[in-house]
Picture 1 (cartoon, rainbow, N blue to C red):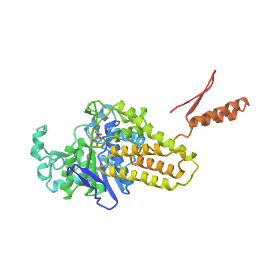
Picture 2: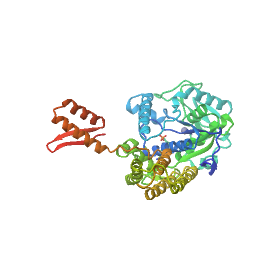
Picture 3: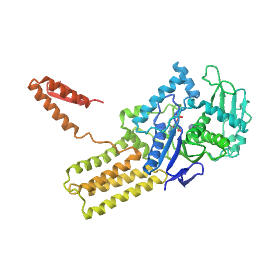
Picture 4: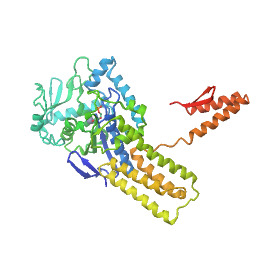
Length: 467
Ligand code: AMP
Ligand code: ZN
């Protein structure tokens, strides 16, 4: 039984899907005006892991993550670069895929772009106006927060508290300072679409309400995003969607905590960020994932290079165990396990229950990783050259299995690469001695295909691996 901490009820609740065996999940994706940073990456990786864990538990997951490809930041950046907003979006969407793929993030079922949903967004806004939840003022359309009685239920504040706490610019166009734009009239030089209220563009919140509705339905299982989105973004999404449909929008709201740098939120505006791309240049994706998943997703994480290094060391310990078991698998002579080993296999299998217990408990990847370490410690001290192949295989399969939802521990050793290279170099030397230049070149090319380049030095042939 999977339990989820639901921001809406502020409780851990048993997950009950709308449709048996299925999860309909919507995650707020990036605004595509720049490379994404490690803070964004944590959010993407956390929800990617949650998705993969649901899949591990046998669910079919419909996973939607949008691209916000029209807003003030997009418009300003496109103007700075002298390109269109569309060109900017295209560029950073393709950069997103490059980094996300490299971070082993599984592609979403659909990655909708806000600008592809203008027509249904306009229909959504019209419906809100018809139902009396929104009003037009000179080409802008605002949502009337007072009309939606449950406004504030996600962030746990009522309208009066919110109003007192917020730094609100008095805007004469709005009936109430807490109202928010669902449609924005075009300003000079801005991209715009035709609408019943003149040329304009959608507000940010309505995009997600509309795309979640069109791709998943009126009620969805899970809506997720970083914790900065609880208010106002998700609060406003709830207001719009529930005002329109008269039904609960999402049954479970999941919010991931920030990545900080020196205890401040990592963000583009504070300029204290590391892009995923620059970190990927120095650290393997699995190390980055290990680090970002080594704390619970609702706990903030202070990012530093030291943490990356310690993640790297931890991963090396785990891989040593894996590669050791892989060599044993080839070496051991006994195929089938003995009676005594049968019991040991059962003992090992109990780690699966522990692992599932941790992950079922609000996706506690931190504790799940501890279970992996416990398992590895156990196999390190109990499996050796005397063990049977069956036991070795079982242990190995289990470690790999636990890594799968987290997308760690899935690498395959480059089988004794060094020995193989040395052998090829020797063959090439022999070919040269025999003046068999064709064979010598062939071997050089073969090495090149493995990213190995040769240098002939007075001391002999040297080789190095290039990336
Ligand atoms: P943005 O591109 O700023 O719209 O953010 C994309 C996603 O990353 C959203 O779900 C944000 O909540 C999340 N996010 C932004 N900054 C951080 C951070 N420092 N730590 C964790 N998540 C973040
Ligand atoms: Zn959103």
